[in-house]
Image 1 (tube, one colour):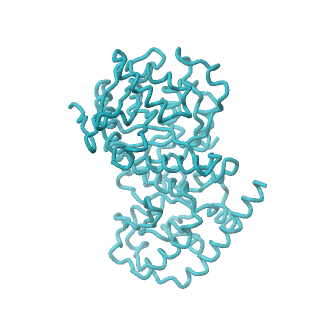
Image 2 (cartoon, helix red, strand yellow):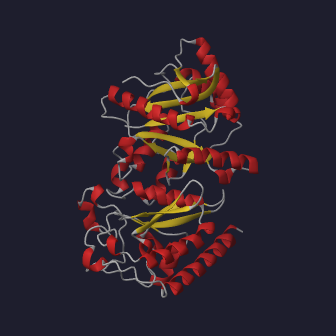
Image 3 (spheres, chains in turn cyan, blue):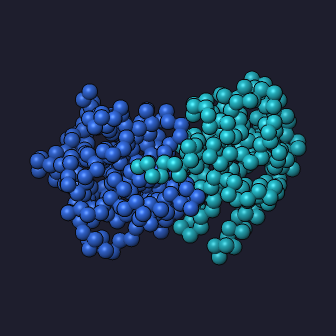
Length: 200
Length: 242
């Protein structure tokens, strides 16, 4: 029963991802100059570990439910490239949410800072520098990633289209996922938590 | 700097000391009234009012009660963990008639201030915040229980708490205490809970929380579990990839 329930959820989320990527073809360009201007803060990668934490804001990617499985299926990457957190949906059903951080850096970033899976790249990456926040009335609010160097170029029509995607996801995103998303503001994943394990 | 004990709508904070029999009774009555489901843990209140108790070797404990308009309306039991730079909030609760007045946030700010003073007393620069355990609404059996659990969780979110993504099982009792025995809790089972962290101003500036430190702080230092206890390993399993 549990396995069937998870399979059903996974199937529903895969359909949503297919829809998002299909519709993305019609989303206006963000007009951001990521490749030209963003050499510092976007995409979690090993050299960011050398920087002080306050210099690497925006370097955590939180995947949606089953987005990790979707990426695994589409790209062939293994599960262990992701930081994984448990998300309990019921007392008996726990799924895993994938994340990239400075301990589990993005495996899809090429040496010249290009995204190798642009066709399927995560909604969290796709949305940046817009940052969704769920308020106490369970309404979406939006913040801007202030460290984005091409923020001033952001196309408002892109913003409207992305916000609509999130608005449609809102009813199916569990509160616990939003709690994880909020936690990610306080997490870098480096140094490796294993290094802390025997220290205290 | 002493705490400002004056809160919303004439509320006044009182610290309960072990030698004040009247206030201790007030605290116990509030505990029984606000946390009836935890009645077996009422015995935790009195030793906590001592500040330092041999059964709590790693914590400096506080019991506070809140008075408003001549009535006792709120209770807070919390500790500074001597071996860490954060605290542990065991219980916070108010009578229903005073909810919605901002009492919770007021008390949280006072707890942060007290923990800062405690940390400095023990040679730390300050406190980064405090941990707490909150019921998971998904574990509730009835709609009413779920509604209460969601309200409690939302209260913590509104007070600035971060829900930590580590799986957490609440132990039945602190190991080795002299005021409660395993026999007293034989009908209870350890429950999955949310482990939440309420950061102080200092803590909110930390961009990389040390989850291992939190898990060890609450399990090893507060509950006094051994490092290899299954609950500790379960909590850290995702984090350490085990």
